[in-house]
Length: 94
Figure 1 (cartoon, rainbow, N blue to C red):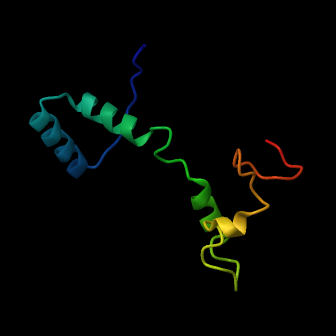
Figure 2 (tube, rainbow, N blue to C red):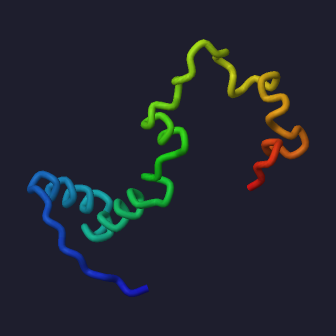
């Protein structure tokens, strides 16, 4: 893999912290930055879950006067989920 060079401007306090961390870990500043970017940009690190999206859309908790365990109690799932393969019954198929 060919390494690409980028230029980033940072505040002096952040530069100081970067230099200290690099010295403490006996690594180059570039290595510290690469590790930080790899950690920050992991595929799942910033991707919202379906729950996050539903919450932002105001869908979580929007149903009123229903049982609190509606989504987890098996008695409410009867007829909606095939007991053999846990897929929804009816016409919908993935």
